[in-house]
Amino acid sequence: MNIDKFEEDIKKCRFCFMCRHLSGVANVTFREADTPRVRSSMIWGVMLDKSKLANADFIDTIYSSDMSAACRFHCVNKWDENGIVLAARRDIVEAGLVPEEVAKLAKKLVSTEAAPKISGKGDVVYYIDADTASVATEAKAFDKIAKKAKVKYATATAGECGKALKVLGYANEAAEKLTAFVEAINNSGAKKFVVSSPFVYDALVNDAKELGLKVKPAVMHVSEFVVSLKIKFAKKAGELYYLESDYLKNYNDNLKFPRELLKQLKAVSPAGFTTDILDEAIDFTFGTNNEESYTCGEGAVVLNVIRPDLVKKMAKYVEARAVDVKNDVIVVASPYSKLQLSKNTKLKVSTLTELAASCL
Image 1 (cartoon, one colour):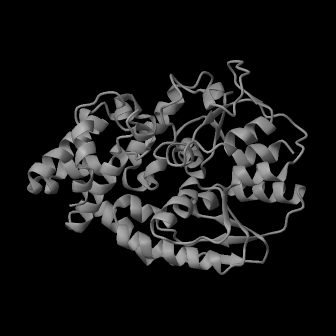
Image 2 (tube, rainbow, N blue to C red; image 1 turned 45 degrees about the horizontal axis):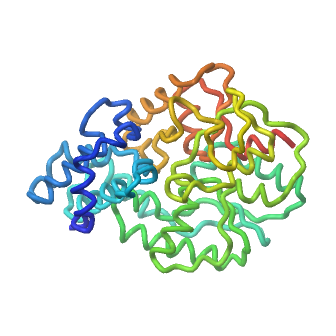
Image 3 (tube, helix red, strand yellow; image 1 turned 135 degrees about the horizontal axis):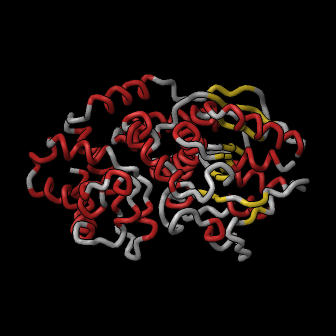
């Protein structure tokens, strides 16, 4: 079984309480089963008795994880609780025990054409995935920034990079999708492939590397691209809270470019902190600490589809921690997070791209 590869981490995680406050799911369900320690304990139980893999409550718990990887990122020993859950999902898939809602979504993803449709030609290709397309102002904001910098670009739309399938436990199908996706962007002739979605960024940077795939264009999150343009912004961003992305922070070693962009935009914390935001995001700490994930399940990519009620609770959890719901400016790096927060709360939410465009 795939979980066997994580035996040592499972043994350790099942007795550790240190990161229980970092489970976005447990913070809204209040279930011990949704804490990293108990998830690992349940998986240890499966290792001892394989028949427990088919337990409905176990399967529900494993697919309810927000997969933020906050526990792994902040663990002093780097025990991979996130990898443990992903391995358990793979075992559930391979045993044919997938819940109906997951199987239905996976079937849809498998049937989706992997290669994105590329329109136009240029050294820069901007990818508009499904989440980015759903935030109508995101692509418009990127276009405004590109025109200001006099950058011509092509666009890539639709397609399936395989990240959702991988997170759901469909490793082979995910690999096939990503292979075809990478081939398409390699054939585009682009030198830079810019994405708004952090999970697409992670797929092209980390998943592709795991599969031995060479991505020819330089893969850039939109924050890195905008920083590279060295635009002189006419307006200051002012006071805001920045909610870190799971994939940019916990999966990609706290990628520095979102904070570099915030520095360029002269963003400041409502609390008045003035320390260097390039070192830590603590200037914009939201809630009680800067370790928690406030992405509404970005790490799980499609949690909003398979567990919509859970995502709604996570969004309300974020809203409850705002100082001034009507006036606080909340900035996110992920279109997914903007969609969930905008749909389920009254918070004023902006993506980094939208914020930068508003400062031109």
